[in-house]
Structure formats: structure tokens, C-alpha cells
Length: 131
Image (cartoon, rainbow, N blue to C red; front, side, top):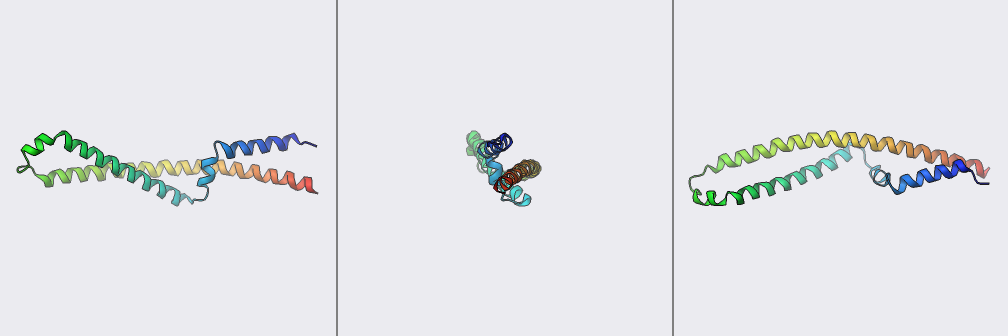
């Protein structure tokens, strides 16, 4: 006999595995700290690349000024400003990333708990039908 409740449960599990839960299942192998740190490294790397590109664009935009005043510029001041800006914005990005990925991990775990509960319920259906 076909058990309709079992079919619904199997469909729900398959839908989760194929669509919305695909990434969550991949991320289920991480502890919270590892997940947050991995994504924090990605954010800092991306921010560093973007910052370097932005600085290069600023330098190219002001190239004529830099060439005319190459001997009279205070390079130490410019480097200090750029490093200060980089570190200040990097700290804000890092804090935002830690908060965002901590909350995201909590959501992933709650979805995986529901998924695990459904799998256990399906397991009970199979145990009943075998005996």
C-alpha cells in the first residue's frame, strides 16, 4: 500500500535537498567558528582587492598632479591616510561579516534541524514497514 504521508515526507526531503538545502547541507560540516572565520577571510580578501583597485584608480585619476609635484609631495602622509582608511574600513567590514555570518549560520542550523527531524521520521516509517 502507498502511504500518502510517507510520500509527502519524501517529497519534502527531496525538495529541500535539491533546491534550498543544497548549500546548507554543504555547510553542515563546519563548526560555527570555522564557518564564520572562513567567510571572514573571504570578505577581507575581497575588500583588500577592491581597496587596492580603488587606490590605483585614484592614483591614475590624479596622475598629472602627481607627476608635476613628484618631488614636493609628502608621501608619508598619503601612505598614512591610505593605511588608516584601509584599517578603519576593514574593521567595520570584519565586524559586519562576523555578525552576518553568525546569524546566517544560526539559520542554516535551524533548517538542518528540521531536515534531520524529517529524515528521522522517514526512518521510522521504514522501520515500521519492515516489521
